[in-house]
Length: 415
Image (cartoon, rainbow, N blue to C red; front, top):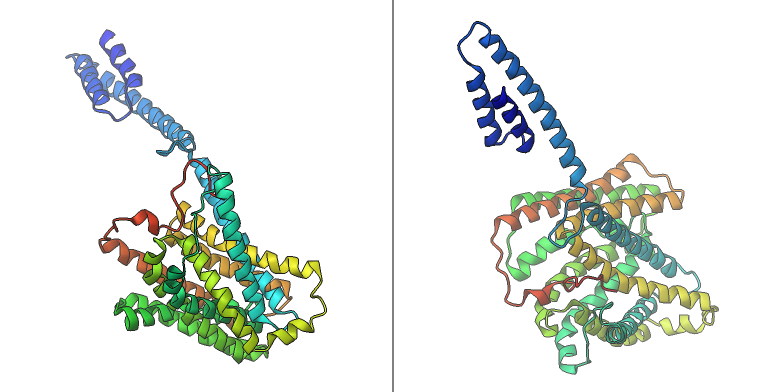
């Protein structure tokens, strides 16, 4: 019996299922299995007690693991709950900034009194340049709180970035023109061909081939686009001009991604330096376009040119345009590029629903089907490409830290 109690004690001392417990059980059975008339029944009784005890210990171990899971620490000393809350807050911030920016731009561009989409876009680029200067100043005053690169304007760098800037102003201009003509509800479908153009232009310019699965995803997106155009036409709200602007904007988005990779070395791989030079060049390039399209006349006859509320909304649009770059990088940093794309797809779906409800519109089942085809095809394409990237060994560049959208976290969040 002493041996039995010693082994029973060791069951509590060592984890369930460990080799030590197995040895103890074997020793117990050996000691209690002496020859005798009732030894077999006693051994069976002992075995049943050991099984019940093992089951209880397993259940308690699972419970302890479940309770301890919420306190699991990552290498940075951050608990699971805190990490989940932080990721949720970052995703929610991205959704808020992105959706608000789209609706705010729609409000500014839908102004009946001021038909000047180029000037609205120019002013937003001007606000972005001003915010870059402000962030540089604040990073010097509060270096521990705000991390922003110090940028001095260099004419040579500006010329190297100029080809991208031309694509950039085309992208944001046609993007805003599409939003102006089709509205927020149809905006997702109207601007849905970016993925298709990305595959097409990557093959034409970069000679990169695409897998059959990815091409099939593009086929789903194209089907959703045509179905959406057909269903929007049946409602009588279709703007062919807006659809054209959306297609051109989608092509410019793909070109912008390709040219960004080419000019990154000119700005030391820093996305904020690129944004600074891009927006300065855009401000200069927009001035002759505003004159060419006669928007100065619209500005001169605008009755609210001295209205502080109007200029406040214009400035707010520029602030959100600057903030979207930051929160996009923040979401990628705290999740992953794949999660960011999935989040963007879900955000586009929510944005469409909000627009339909806000405008009290009634849409057909096929209209909603077109949206789901576009969003589903885009999500599937992202998933397929992520699997292909995992299979392909990635070559890490020698200065990969500079190519990240945001610098590594230094104990505090950035801005």
